[in-house]
Image 1: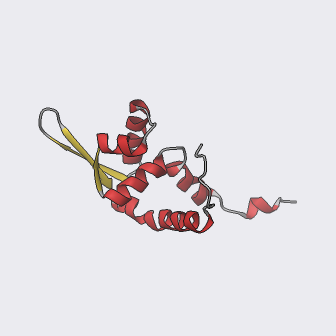
Image 2: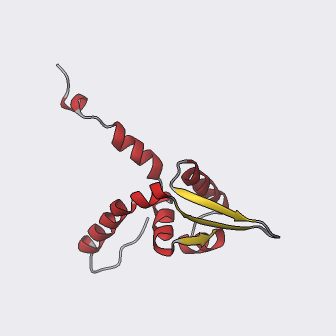
Image 3: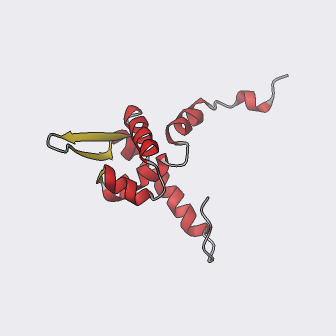
Length: 114
């Protein structure tokens, strides 16, 4: 006898989560959604406690997964900007729903973000 979860196709969910899971990816996508185009330093400042290595890795992963686009302009030092790709933009209704849910369920007292 099969368990009920054997009838559920979890592959689409697992795939989507593999692209956005972790502490920083959704936050990076959020800021690019709100600001449209950001330079590396602006993203780092917006995120606060992220390390250079972590931000660099997450940006590379998001770019490899086609959720963001990296534009490098020649110069010294080179200017690099990031923005959402078309695929990244297609994820924004999900992010908007999460924001709406947070607004509706946010307690009156400030939360401690972990």
